[in-house]
Image (cartoon, rainbow, N blue to C red; front, side, top):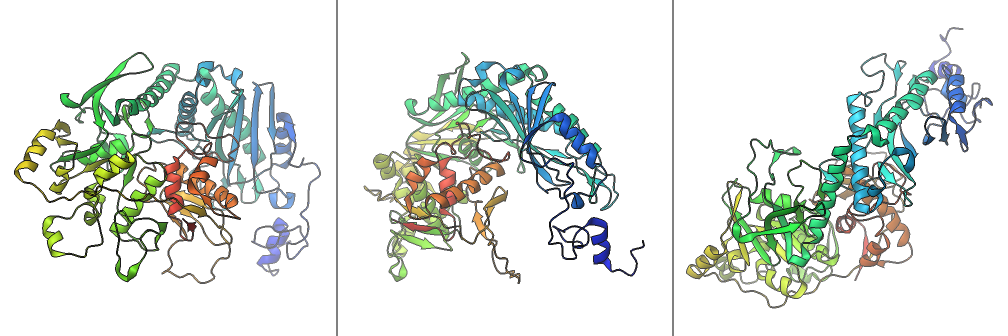
Length: 635
């Protein structure tokens, strides 16, 4: 029968058994799509474990049928257990989901992989192994064009074949705990987590292509990524050893009274401002420590490494423009993470509690004690419980310092270029001109911060000479080569004395109780590294372009390196909301209760549901929590 004269709604209902073009249509004859869907009794329902042969039969039986009429659930929970290859393969909770990215877990017994048990001996080895197999999986997907799907570029419009593309949360330059590849706590299994989209043409099931994806492509991807015999065993071994060396090197900093170490031969510059990859080694100037600052450390693989040690206290990094002082600081701020072999920074390590501090105009602040730096604000505002929805450069920077101290930071990393100058220094002329200045600059607090709280400061300075008066060591960068010039700096201070008045007392460090209320908000989620979306459940029918996007701005947290870290923070925000639903809880206690989900050198728990989560430090999680507008805080 022709569709003419019946109206488009009737046409779609007759063709697809639903309520026109909308989602969730009912069976044919139900004009409003509200009746129960037609279920084909020959299709086994989700919820049990079935063998692979049964799945093959299921896919063949629905090939070419309309998934709207079959009542097929548009979600997929696929668990592929490769217990004995290829004899016993089972699939759990399988339902068909056309043309949308769905999560796949492929689990293999450890013994079946052939991987050496030595990789199970520590969390850091497990993390390195899982990072490596994730990279292999991503490489296989790209090299075989599995990220494009079998019908990529084929056209065909809405009714043409679509789906079949694979994707995994590919790592960057850092080696971090991630849920894309995980080892069970017992060490009995290892699994990959990735996504694929099952194929469809319009609303027609392509069962044969689905079989190719699930029974052939998934198997190949898993076997190429997890079987020891298919891996480059030399590169895998080097990867694990390199990460283990970095972790052990970082652990030697505190006993040596250092906050950072930069190895001789390191490549600090990156390929470009838009790339984290190293500069071409043929063009890069490799790092070489000044003899006065050179130290050596043994490594677990039996080798040793020499380079520049940055001592606890107050360190100035200075030099002319474009000579590498900010590049050195950037390498140090990411020295909290382990890096892949060949990155150039894999033997640059930093105090694991180090925090990069910057000014952050416009950030939200909730009841933070900034009184060590700012007092006597106009209008009598209380700076011991300072709150604002629009912080200035100086108040935001003071807040960032205090919040970092609250959660255990022992090293501040600061660049003059990204700071509020009036929080760094006030010269004698401005002190004379402005008598009622409420800001006490960091240059006056850095010494007492170190002596009373054990917190070191590393600061890049190009034009604020007053800092020479308080520095313990001064390092000048000249053409990316460091020179120790502390003696020269002290001589200049003697020749040109400054009027820096150092405070004998630093002041108080905040201790806050936190309560998070997510009522009326959708689950937090990060689509990009710098922002966690927190949209209201009730959508405003009128778009207001003057309203800011609802969520948490993370762009001021410089040590976040992957969107997966932001997604982990978003997941944990919901847990904090649950823990503090009745009463506020001390921030330190909250971080302690989530210690198994936070950290960059301990494995994430396998009960985290997603495959795109990446480990983050407690310091970044606390920083994100503190930037949440509307968070309830008391002190």
